[in-house]
Length: 330
Image (cartoon, rainbow, N blue to C red):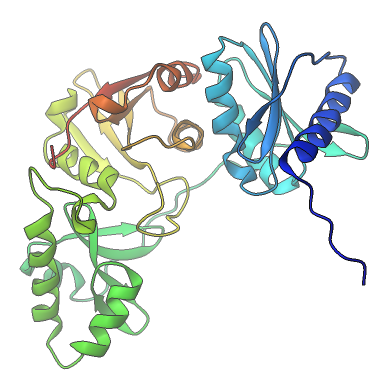
């Protein structure tokens, strides 16, 4: 067996840079200057153009990073090369929701070809709540929520219960649910849910610090606040809808969407986020394609309104703005 030779960062950047230059030259684009790193990939910045190659680590997040880079340099044109067909197809689909449309290309041999967009996401009718689940949740002051076909119970946006094939499980996250089943399996579900909900409420409050129960899934906490009072963003009503991508876990950033109605009957897509999530606008693009709103509101805490994010939001093909709203923890 031949030993694996690993490249140092300088060598890897040099090889990726040469490859990206060749791909760009094949399109008639000349790349000069030094490249910049892009989430495991690479990019060249020209006067009005960003040419980027997605990395192989997290190719699905390359479009968001490339859009931010282009916006930060006032580049109207973006060309993004992908090695992975699935990631290229998703990026191409999302790109169609922007104006101007970023060019997404799939590497093929020494050249590339225009990536074929993946099918637009669909959202079917949710399954009915399992017998007794809504009553169980409401009895403990917990919000029953159905997302991607799974019924959950939430306190201020944080999951404390879930309906599974084996019954109703309580706890924050999968590991807490498993621990609760082992340690408190003899308790009635109503009692274990009430205990979990009370524990979350004790930490998830105004002035909350860095305790995990206060800091997890804050984008959903922000959405919860707006669902309770849509007038804060000048809407008549607001209803949660499925995120574009199913959450990978409680700690993974996952913009929380909802659909609302303005007083003039406009259909408004509201997307809540907290912190800097490079995938915020690309996933919003997927939601625009699925929900077909009249306009978009991206809602973040005021400190998270950053000029590059504002510029990328403004590139969506439907009227879109970003607004600052303090969450219940502030």
